[in-house]
Length: 210
Image (cartoon, rainbow, N blue to C red):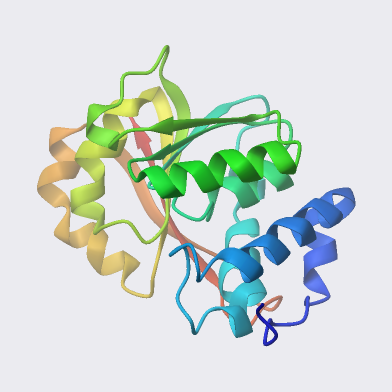
């Protein structure tokens, strides 16, 4: 059993509102089972809320109400399950190729009562969906230029890439010039979320696919 889990920060209740109990249940399950099941590393429990759950939840307001959002490489459910908890008005397709992670995502979706989640075992480049997505997200999957060819084809015309990135986000945009042209991606920018609210801000690359 994990005993060194980070206490819940006060901002969590603000971000999740009446969904905070569900967020707590997910975070507790990840703290107890995450390392054993190969979902998180041994250094993560002491920063599980701030570095992971809150980091993902900050992105929730960017999602389109009533939309359909894909999360590529969902892994432990960061950000897919966190966003599904925070935004019950959005439909999520969690795309993950590894069987043990797919099992975790399905178990958590069921135990948390998330009826706005579909889990799909596949590599993003092999996905064939019934209808294009409104938005696609990913976290800690790959460099922006490598993400574009596997995420942009999943998005409808006029849809959005909403990708969680690190401190080098702007440089990643510069390195992706060729791919941006090839996949007709416009209005590319970095947005920083959580400034003045959390110690670790969330950086998002947002872009429109046309």
